[in-house]
Amino acid sequence: MRTGRPYGIASLSVAAGLALAGCQASAVGTEGSVTDAPARVEPAADGGPAQLILIEEAVLRLGITTEPVAGSDSDLSMPYSAVVYDAEGATWAFVELEPGVYQRESATISSIDGDRAGLSDGPEPGTPVVTVGAPELVGVEAGISGGE
View 1 (cartoon, helix red, strand yellow):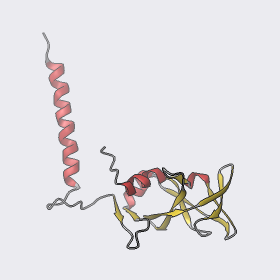
View 2 (view 1 turned 120 degrees about the vertical axis):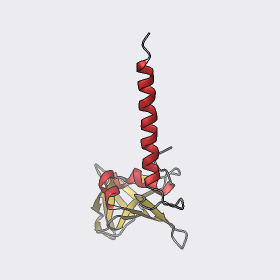
View 3 (view 1 turned 90 degrees about the vertical axis):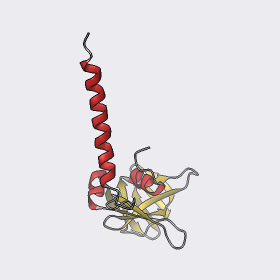
View 4 (view 1 turned 90 degrees about the horizontal axis):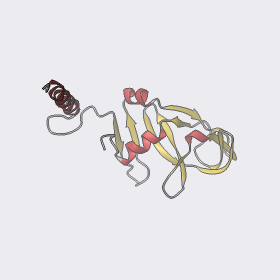
């Protein structure tokens, strides 16, 4: 009777678990604080939306892209892919404050025409909004690390 295969599979499982544990340990400092976290959340002092700060590698790995809000103050539009709906149905977008720094901003949709969302209120014209990667930013803000 051959028993090599079950032991081999068990060995691979143990090795994979140790490798994952090693990855987690490298991101945690000596006092248990995260040292090189790919993202961090900075709560706003006024209780508003937090700033999400990502390291450059995280931005690249998530493939985050942005496009500017178009139009004038009375006729705004942005890519529909930038629109995020919350659990209550409110709409908003993530704006890029500076490279790697993002924050939620309310956006009131007045119309949808193809891949463009017309806005009656929202980010200023020219403001870069996240068109790819917004769901991942929702997870960052909500504290979902991907290990759940």
